[in-house]
Amino acid sequence: MQEIILKAPAKINLTLEVLKKRKDGYHQIRSVSSIIALFDEIKIQIKKNKPNNFSNPNLDALVKKNLEFRASGYKISKKPQNQNNCFLAVALFLKKFAPQILKDYKIFLTLKKNIPIASGLGGSSTDMVSVVYGLIKLFDLKINQNDLRGFLNSLGSDLMIFYLGGVVSLKGKGDKAKQIKEKPINLPMLLVFNKFQWSAKQSYQKLDVKKLPQLRVDGSAKMISLIKKSKVEEIANFLYNDLELSNNTDKAYLIKIKQYLKAAGSLGQLMSGSGPTVYAIFKNNRDLEKAYKNLSKVFGKDRLYLIKSQ
Image 1 (cartoon, rainbow, N blue to C red):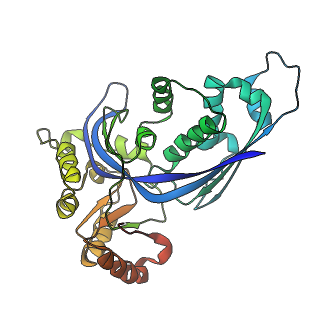
Image 2 (cartoon, rainbow, N blue to C red; image 1 turned 30 degrees about the vertical axis):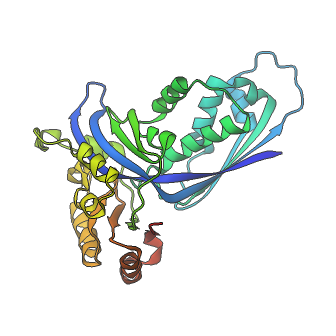
């Protein structure tokens, strides 16, 4: 049995500007996102099937027969396996690009969730990109990159962050992506998880775009400039997310978390994506570790995640 083990990284939004609602129901955005050192763990195992005489098998039947999925970890969803996004990504990818594999192999997916679900950190999207990457590598598939990008964009609007990696600029509905830096941002950072989940769809739907500033500078372009110059304090001061203003957001909760983080010595604080995860940037690892120690007494260690700069 062959296998591959993958680390699927989370992301944070450094900026997220919602410009308008589109006719297709999505929102026009500008955003700068970065991969961070928080990972889901995925294992893909494949086993060759015995030869069979099915000349034109039903692909859905083969998915049900030859694709198995198991998940564990951080508040894992109890949905049936065929409703899990990781499972669906594999099924859709193979049906589109390599249906013969569904006939010839038994595939076992194992997912260990470390990234909280519905937390604004892209946990579902990164898992989908990672399993597709794993299949391409395991089977040495030759896929046209434009076709692959199109397929990933059909699964969700933020998958390009994980396809490109590093620091990424997003426009359109999130599908127009450009890598700004090959490596992720290297900043001391503390994440505060929450016990509840916020729906990204609801956060966008309950955002009154008309109340947002209509004439404003391109904050994402400014952030890109600061990142290229590695100006830590200016990056921390320029963090911005329009979804903090959504009626789906618990604003009192955000204010409270940010106050704790600011009092702990952070330079800047922001909700990532649609939340509810809030992160803070610190000047150095010493300040970060001190804040982690103090805030562990407030939130508990299970709600905090520390990322040191290298």
